[in-house]
Amino acid sequence: MKIAVLSDIHSNLVALEAVLASLPSVDAIWHTGDVVGYGPEPQAVVERLIAAGGVGVRGNHDDAAAGGASIESFNPDGYRAMVWTRRHIDEGARQYLAALPERLVPEGSTFTLVHGSPRDPIWEYLDSTPAARDNLGVLATPHCLVGHTHVPRLFRESGRRVESQVAGEDNVVEIDGRRLIVNPGSVGQPRDGDPRSSYVLIDTAAATIAWRRIRYDIVATQSAMRAAGLPEWLADRLKLGR
Ligand code: ZN
Image (cartoon, rainbow, N blue to C red; front, side, top):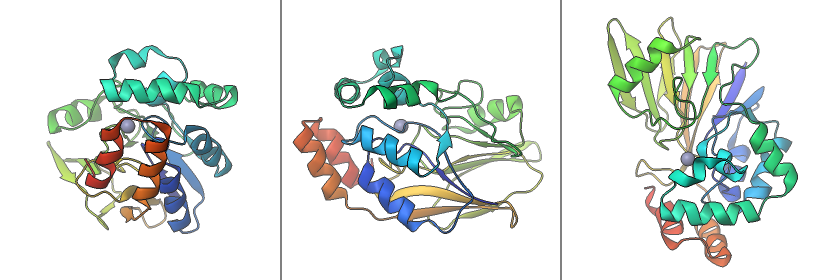
């Protein structure tokens, strides 16, 4: 089975289309949340993801867009963008976001999907080895997919240690007996210094997970954000990958 895993699309339709166009034939598309927020096309991104058959979990931005209290924890730019987002999705999209589960183990799979972390699925930023060790300890499946930090990354058990690696383009890890946590990076707002969209491909027959980077028309997304009156820094940062 081949599975594409997308995360943190953040209402960036141009990036989502570029990623979908780049996919080989896959059996499933999974996402680890933050479908909306920050970007200019929340409604179209929700509709496109549903049309593509994507299944996944709820991020803090999805929760806020659906009316949740997560919005109270946002920084000023994120807050402004979220108020705008709430006004630019219809009731169907709102219900879709509200119905996303906090955790998901797709049928027959060895992967748990969460946005933040296994122990705190909406909010924890899994960005350190100690946090990864604690979360590997509470994981109910051998493997876990997360999002939220927008940084492509691998944490893996190695004897009594936990390996940590920021994953570059074309990094491949083998799925073996060891427990691991994978962050595919962000489709719509990468923050690892590389502005290209990031995602992973899982091949269960080959037992591999591979990271991919895809160029998209950043200027088109920035133009749409400026036309919508979204905060300038949110448009600027797309070019920087920060
Ligand atoms: Zn995010």
